[in-house]
Image (cartoon, rainbow, N blue to C red):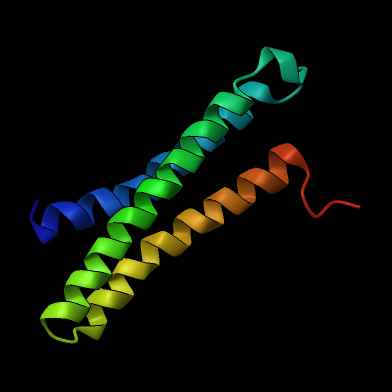
Length: 100
């Protein structure tokens, strides 16, 4: 797979997981947890995070092994951080982490 395709997939993962999380939030608003798709969507958010980690690690390894391309490393870490943010927001909104 080329570097361009890896970057496109890597940048689409956080966008799609955020859109899916927002859709689940809109669907779940005002309903009991049994009538929603919170757990299924969480599975896909975690799966997206794992895929994002794998692709980011492969890209970082490629940019470090060939020659030190720091800009490529930074642009590989940006969507991984965005996906980490989406995972954290999902845990806070739906599962109440960090709530007293």
